[in-house]
Length: 70
Image (cartoon, rainbow, N blue to C red; front, side):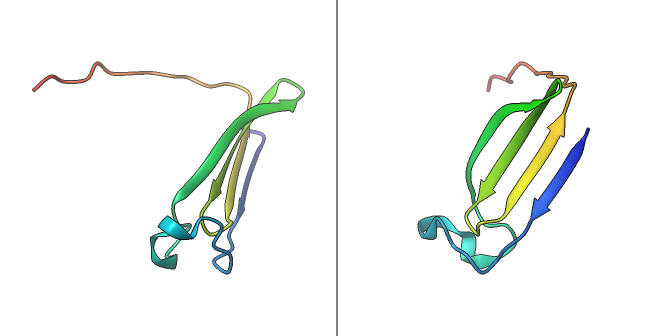
C-alpha cells in the first residue's frame, strides 16, 4: 500500500435519503477504481456524509468462495 487517506466530515449530507441518521460515515454513496500512476491503483469511496476513503495499492489478491445452496 502506498497511501491511505480518510477524510471524515459529518457536517455534509450528500445523499439525504439514506444517510443512516448521521452516525459514522453514513451510507456508501459510490466508489471508483482508477489508475494512480507509477503502477498503482486507487480505490476511493464517497460516503453519504461527504467523507471519503482512499487506498492506493500496487498488488491485489482476489479470492472467492462458492455460494452455499439452501
